[in-house]
Length: 321
Image 1: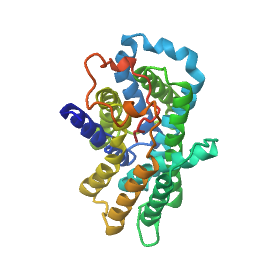
Image 2: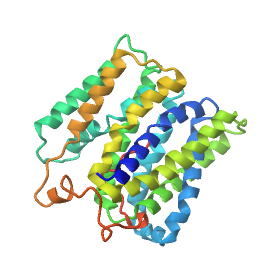
Image 3: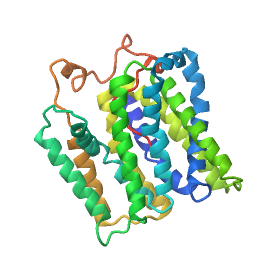
């Protein structure tokens, strides 16, 4: 992997590990619906110029049904669930539970009729990951939240695991940034009435304002642009490595900034969930795809580089918090 690729990989991995901390700070000042509204509205506004630059938004008209389904499973549902959960749940626990997405994806694949052979290592990974979740939430471990908070995070993970299936089936040819900007805009419009009806809302303190701005500008708009650049640089398969950086960042920031406990059980659960997720998401190469994935060059040639506006949505995209 090139130096540029490593910089992009580490940048996105860190940026998408930060939202759990920022959400925890923001929900201490404003309602969960307000967090989602401000984050998605700001993110949509910042991405809109990129989306309009090449006229990519017009492509979405023929895909509005799967687009809405994708938005519901990827953003509208998960982001309110995460914000609600973090009113009581530790930010580090939230980050670790979201890391179970590849494990859930294996189960969902079987439920929706995927009958392709699943390697034994993937089933072992599923069991190892579940063991990590059990260790994290077992007796004597304080995750800082109620069972319903944990359930909300796991429901968000189910959404994150389901959305790529829709993208893979119906949105392969849709440019990624117009799709992202539209999904963010739809989400902001969805939560606007909720924010208005539940108002008036007091002005949050400075740390709450800064958390909201950082969520929308850095962890949403900038993160998506960098992520699509990363895909161009290293390929879709390698770009998913950011998923294994996010939980580590979430746990570290929770401990350093919010004084969340990092016990031996938390460290062990982190290792088990990450190893299990990596094994569960392991794929066998088909004859046609092998040369395009594991054996892809570390950096695309100049002829292969494309503008991010022309990049189709990655079916295996890593979900942001």
